[in-house]
Length: 221
Image 1: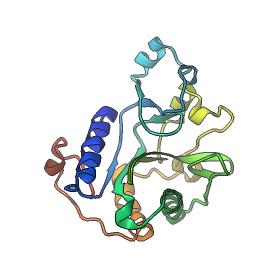
Image 2: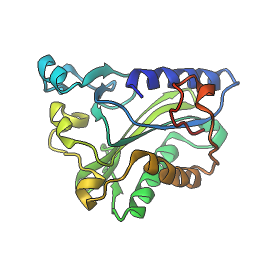
Image 3: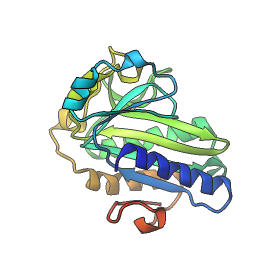
Image 4: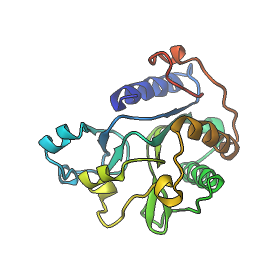
């Protein structure tokens, strides 16, 4: 799903929760090539010029999430939990800790040892390299945006930005670490079980048409 479509969908879900008629939802999807720029990003965090970005078919989108610059693209599992934390009786630090832990536990299932970042470095890491980026937005008690986990991601695209504002902190992927080629659809199914357990909730399939997304797009709520 293109990034802007997913962003618009999240906005509709947030509005539904704020107005009292919506459902807590977890979107699990994959984006085409895009650099997303969070609220702390600056133009000089994009290193490739327009010609190079066009050649590589990568879009730049200035987003309302927290954080700086990151890359989304094929081979990456992107998760957008749109949740009212009041429903789960969670604070923001508790939510972020459980979101990190859900990814760490899923990676452990794949044989990958990982850990949360040091203070000031969000996400999930392995030996100083980032496996998953995390950036959220808070609208009163409703959170949106979320995480991006590198499965078979082409890490060369990260050369076009200063990832999360730290050029010295490089990304890695499950494929690089283990040699496994994990399909994003299979990863979504397996990851969802860890999300359920860590967030203390239950996920049910919801027909994509109810969220006004293109037919056939896998959506979990």
